[in-house]
Image (cartoon, rainbow, N blue to C red):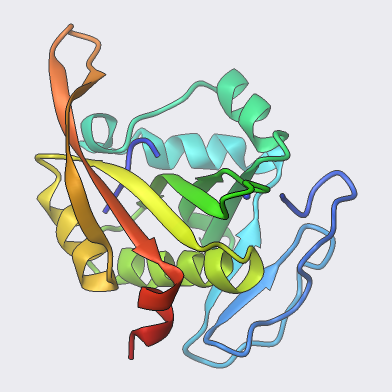
Length: 201
């Protein structure tokens, strides 16, 4: 599951969340890398610049270039320090098992963009659990009203996962992305609103 294009972070002295949610997710900021979670929780951490190489390894897994997209280290280093961007991680013991990039922190419209999300072992439920945990951060911690994303038209696995999680397709954005070979590809615009998230069982 992935989103190629795709928030105020717990970095550089900004206010850290620093607490476990009442829901089944724990947020761990760089300043507080410990938390008490129930057995079903998905642990979410704020990434630091030292995590960039591991994030890039996930981006570069076989088949991910076309579906996830990838940045070089310099671009990641710039984005991870951007106050309107937040990098989130989940770990499998000590290794990065997945990451998400959120953009739009501080938007007056309370609109967040899920720029990119990918996991190391897709197809085993890890991605869906991670996505739900990321959305809890968006709505519970970052007070989003709308979370939106763009997914390639041919990325059916990700599309089905987003629909299952409650995202609504708003339309097809034609020839939005230009590949390195010069070909253009269309992407679906999808969104999830706070009332829809709250109403989910």
